[in-house]
Amino acid sequence: MATHTEAALRQPKAERPDLEYAFVAGLYVACLVVPALVIALSRVFADAAILYVGFLLAVMGVTGVAGWVISKIPGFAIRLGRHDVVWVLVALPFGWFGGVFGADALHVDPPAIAIPLAVFATAGGMLLGIILVAMSRTRYADAILEGATEFAEWEARWPRRWRRVAGGVMICAFTASTVGFVSVFGFGIEWGWRLYYALFVAIPLMNLLNPRTFRVTDVGLVIQHPLQRLFRPWSAFSSYELTADTLVIRPAAWWRPAHRCDRADIEDADARVAAVDEWLPKRR
Image 1 (cartoon, helix red, strand yellow):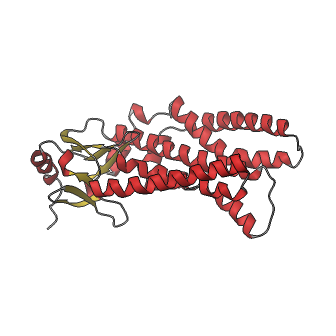
Image 2: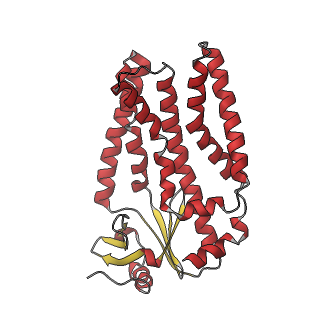
Image 3: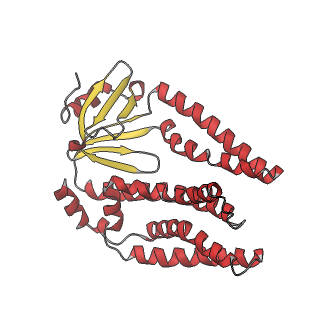
């Protein structure tokens, strides 16, 4: 696996990040940094117009500088997409969420502008973090799969019972976040903004409702989501399991989720399973 990765880092795809990637990465950094700059500015200027202009200038400035720096680092996206620690990018923005709650618990009154800025940083940072993770993983997969041989491909959704549970939770989360939004901006109920964070539960679950494309190659398994391409070497899996309604590809690491496919979605399931069987043992 290390050999494949080092070879990928020597390919053209491993050159400096493209403009699109650098821009998204720069925006992500801006989401984390700009709120602190604006809060510091609010200590000097109380005028809303000045703070608004400062916010816009800070977003443009931080995005430009951070994006330029990242665009100069060869292989940055591939190295980032190689490791699961990349998901830290999604978790970091919640530091603002924790900071606001922590201040409230300690009876410290932050500036009034801190709450909307924390919402901006958490929501925007989480969304951009997810996009950045997807872009990093896709670029890593493209590089590592250069010259690989493909043996089988199929498209499948998650099993029906999983989709039903995910759909129910999403409806509840979207309803709660909508109620929170309306209560704050429509009726001035301050605690309503806390319900807004239910949106962070709904967004990841959307992935369970979308079909994925699986590709069996000689170097590993490729899982194509609507917004990202994920690659896993065969050493990352322990076995596969086939039931009357589900194909499950199980990871070697206990903490990784298994890849579950609705068997009804798989065309010529026997041929696809036979391709997987060439690389993984069947679970008994």
